[in-house]
Image 1: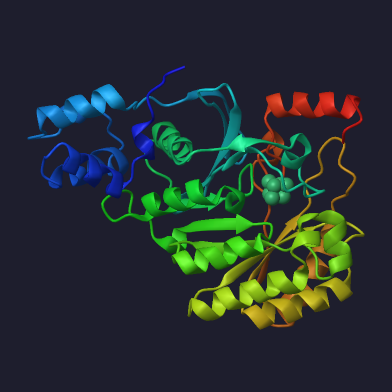
Image 2: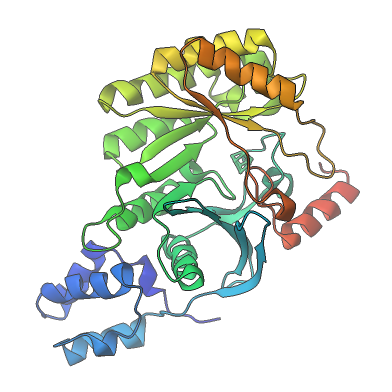
Length: 356
Ligand code: SF4
């Protein structure tokens, strides 16, 4: 194991601090930001007029290697799923989703997840640990190496609940959007949460430069309790209040509602009516995600007819709703299907011991 911390975990303030400590001009912090985070070039020795003592300090104290990509699978629709092995041999998945004008990367923020949504494959192995800021940045750099360009859209919708790993994720978001680095527009960086209400308020207090999506998936506490245990801690009314506060505080900002459609669970016209009321109240658009079944899941995907009826009901009521056809289904890279082979084996062991 390499004991040096990764340079990719250093933000602009950290770099300024190092420059100050070494008594060199702060302009060199900008140079490192540009070289590493804007152009993804790691050869610091090629930076013009770079002080020797700063170069030596960086080389002696920080690591710029990237973790191993164990497998890279490509789906029929060109979606790529990368299995990345971190320094401690923990595996995470990162998904690259091509679109006409830009590539979206779906970032994992944790190894596994503690939230336990019943319809999610990642949930079955539980949480192993949080990813660090540097490890999430390494996912982005690996994408850059894979594609030859940076993804221009980042969604925190991979393995893990990003707001459960708030400090590391917040620093990562600020680094992605920092003007000296990748300078992504905050509109192009989205945190998706299962509904950690206090952390939504914290995002507001911190003025975190990103967009918010909420994985709502139900319109009553009864149904939400049954599919998302987090609802028992932060019930629907508290979550909706937090979303409304977020929208009100960030004028012209909206909260995207994600709704995994489960056959016979949350796909009735009564559900659709309640969802219309919620979406109109927030001014939200709705992403409908027909459930992607996995081996051992207890839910079914609704028929295409039901999916269309549900979407049409929302559209006819004046709510912008789109059915998101999950990309990469043939390589299990679609929403709720991320789970590494290692985690699958852990889940199978637990299952045998009757723990899940
Ligand atoms: S849907 Fe997201 S928050 Fe829920 S268990 Fe899966 S990874 Fe965790």
